[in-house]
Amino acid sequence: MNPKVILVLDDEKNLVLLLIKELEKAGFKVYGLESKSIGISWLREHHADVNITDINSPFMDGLQFLKALKADPDIADTPVIFWSGNANRETVLEAKRLGAFYFILKPSGLSEILASVRNAIGGIP
Image (cartoon, rainbow, N blue to C red):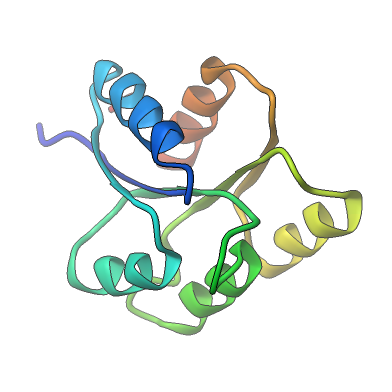
């Protein structure tokens, strides 16, 4: 069985590397990018079962990314999990309204991220 694919998008490179390491230990195939606009292109060319991203980043924020993803019928069904330390109630509600699968507030443990990823794909990789 092929491992499930996760795309991690965050402008904090060390955070991306940490998530890649931990999610790969759990049996996932993980790719990491620092740019959400490149992430949209990547998703159009490749397949991801889940996307993990933050809200705040230069050039394209998480809500803009989610809108772009949902507007493209080829990638619109990719679950998006937000992991952010800088979000208010309105941002969380807007993300859910736009179709985010889950919203995790930092600091949170990797166990919550892993559980939300497994929930998004319907089970264990």
